[in-house]
Image 1: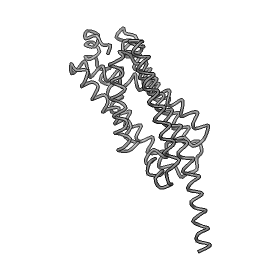
Image 2: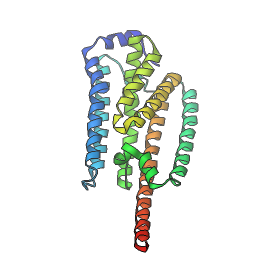
Image 3: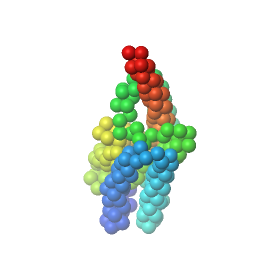
Image 4: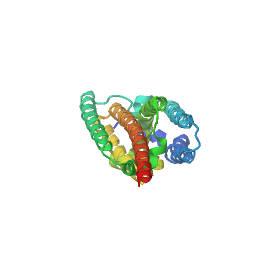
Length: 260
């Protein structure tokens, strides 16, 4: 954690601080929910560019929020490293990043193995509410990687560097800051359904803990980017498996009916 009580006291009493915080913690999650809910509603309309446009809006909106955040702290004579935009303890950052990247890699490997064994109805249930927002082809996957990079950098700055630090100062407890920022982070992913909210909340707490432990945002940014990118790639693979197995199941059913 990298906050100076004196510096945060000036920010805490600023109207701009609370306008921006309401935007990040309230308006942005609602807008994200409506955006992705609209994408789900349009999933059967046949617009092949709908996901790419949605991904683009996410990228632009998150970088716009980060630009506003940088402007806000610049008004108080501060630079972005005030929020923890650095490697912190470089040794701890290296160790933590390596360990969690290995964990992410193993999780992806076992998820792919499990996907290969599941039936179409199991895959459908597993994907649930996120099915309509996952990339389905190489073009969408490329843009999704950009979304993952954007989320990794921007959301760590917004939720950990800003909200977690701000709440920690206001409450006098880094642990309350960790918990409340994690809850807000989870609510920002409500479009993923209840399961997604829980998983995202846990991820947010872990990333917030990494921020506290390493005293910098870099490890969390790398891990957040990697996790989102891997989830997108595995999700794309899951969709392709689901389509092929649904098609195969449909052909087998037709043959059985014909022969029957």
